[in-house]
Length: 147
Image 1 (spheres, rainbow, N blue to C red):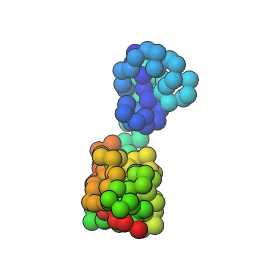
Image 2: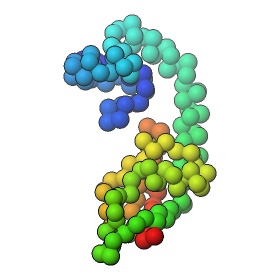
Image 3: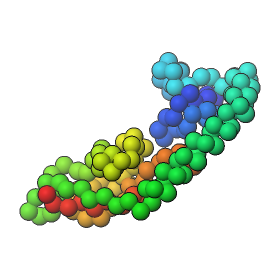
């Protein structure tokens, strides 16, 4: 089943993408929640016209994302957390803590756009990827230290 996404859906696609999904996923989840519409020929024509009109707006959004990525390029974070005597963290460090640290530095970034590749369970240096735009992403280094 081909659908047109009305908003970004994690692990599927971005707004205005035409994607193929299983019919149950489309009919039972994406379409009723308003995240997608069926990609009929008329809907595809409307999408093409809409994208033509909004091309310059999309270019500006991408340019803003690239500027933010340039600012984030040299940023490194230090996250203090409670640690056992063996150096293991109680719990783990995830995208929520990284988003909080970035907001303290003045970067308002949605935590859902931050991806931590490995589970952070020990003290050390790690990297997280911030996906600012579908074509723009930046790596942010962070270090986990004992409190």
